[in-house]
Amino acid sequence: MRQRARSTDDKQRRSEDLLVAAESIALERGGVRFVTLAPVTERARLHRTGVRRYYASKEELLLELAERGWRQWSAAITDDVRDRDELKPRDVATVLADTIASLPVFCDLLTHVTLSLEGDVDIERARQYKTNSFPAHDEIVDVLDRVSSMTVDQIQTLVAATLAFAATFWQVSHPTPTLAVLYEQVPHWGHVALDFNPRLRLLLQSTAIGLTETLSTP
Image (cartoon, rainbow, N blue to C red; front, side):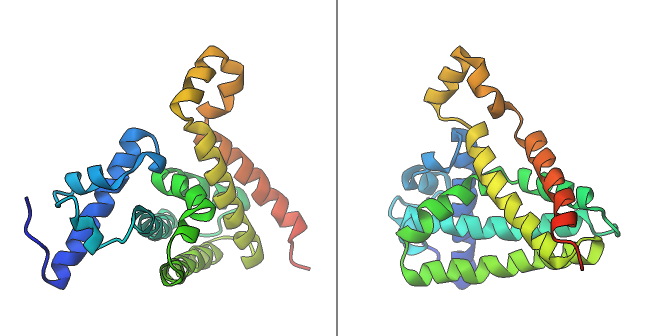
């Protein structure tokens, strides 16, 4: 069993250990809805009450994981377009789709942040989430503005569509155990659960192309 963290670096390391543990459990069990604090602290090799020194609740832990997802998504986009320029709307849509699809736990969390997590923490923790996620959003818009032919308004709208599509389609494509059995029995009902990334790409590409007409520069 690890000793209690004392220095600032130790605390940051323990906090990161808890986030990594929560993410791995979410991936193994099929979503953040199945994450509970007991297995997270056990995997992070902390005492079962140790998590309270870093996060007051499971909701705070998951909200922190969502903040981390924003930073990872921004970094993934920046890395993807580093040596590219003059991206067409279709290319921008592909970048957004592929990078966010590479972060499945973040896609999952997008639903829970809006549905419950922000409302289940105190106002200062909710403020922290907004304070940290908005700059990541703005960085994404800025970097895509520099490397593409799209306007800022078009990119902002496309990013908003990416968040909405990714949140919805991730939930549909990762059904609960009950629905998974149902879809095996009636495959026609479950066909949309089989193609998360291709469907996300298609709809974002179509949206991007459409935005060049509906939000075109006068």
